Image (tube, rainbow, N blue to C red; front, side, top):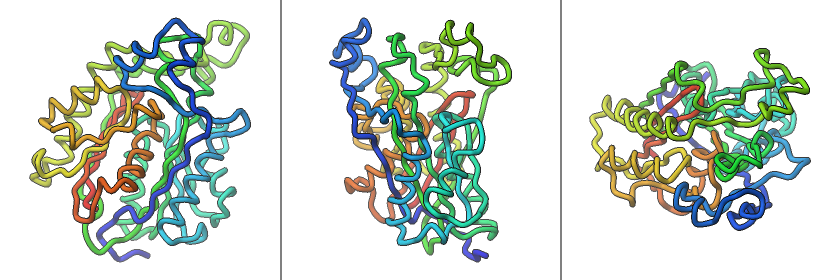
Length: 328
């Protein structure tokens, strides 16, 4: 049992596939240009997993790196959560597959399916279990193989997405840690980004495959409007209970969806560009993994120092959103 009332991130890790898919290569696949993609999205390249590399494989690699960073072994874990919309299969849960791959004990393991908000949802859930005293150490992984559900003939969506995984080990800390959070969802806007077929509503059939319903479908302009509002509102809801203002936040790590969305959110929040961490140029949108990998890299690059207050902020399909304030 954990007696500490403070919970923080004590280890981080990531896994990025080797293959790089550049905008120049996409020019040969669909009617687009490097300039068009970069101007509208801020993306220059993205990573693509191998054909034999599933989400659980990437998740396990990120998990091992996070455990090493935390100075823990897989046997020390009390809980495993995987945030993903590209599981290896409907069931068993990807978290169960990761449990086996990394050699963890038979601890609770489950998936969270809230698209790009997944890492923040996962951290928030793990935080509650540890804070309550039920568990001591939790592993939260955000992993996506979006290339497996991307329609590479649709120029509106195929330029956006990439693959990767990030992981965090949560545990008791003496100071700082997770200070506040805000989560939300609006099912009325669920049609703005979705994977129509493959579930009980539209099972896989010859027609569903021919109609390309097993790929991501997105209403880009409408999603843009919702994203800017909910990310700015979520940030406000997470910081308000703490009495924090924009100048009190050392770094904002937003979901890396689209540079225009991120610039609009920063403007709405009154943040200067130096307070927004971006890596969208080299990875594109990795859904839940975007926030996780960005956090890992921000720490590795020295952008986050002890005592800093950082804000993770994301929106995703559902629609879902979430923000969390952490004192490092």
